[in-house]
Structure formats: C-alpha cells, structure tokens
Length: 41
Image 1 (spheres, rainbow, N blue to C red):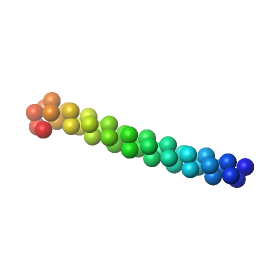
Image 2 (spheres, rainbow, N blue to C red):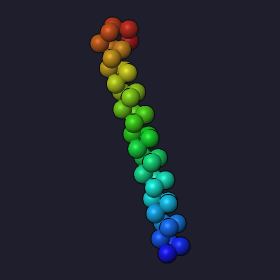
Image 3 (cartoon, rainbow, N blue to C red):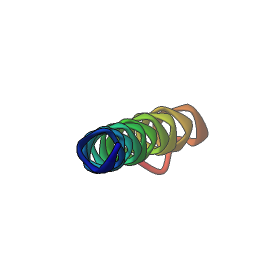
C-alpha cells in the first residue's frame, strides 16, 4: 500500500509537470500567433 501511494504520487507529479509545460507551450504559441495577427510581432 505504501509503495502504491509513492508510485501514484510520482505519477501525479509527472502528469502535472507535463500538463503544466504543455499549457505553457500552447499559450506561448497562441501569444505568438495573436501577435502576428495584430501586426505587432
């Protein structure tokens, strides 16, 4: 049970880290695209 708890915790950290980095990249791409559309980039 303890091993499972540790395992799930590490997986949760990996998932949250992946989701966070993915969100950052997506928002960055969106900002770039919006900037180009506005003619500011």
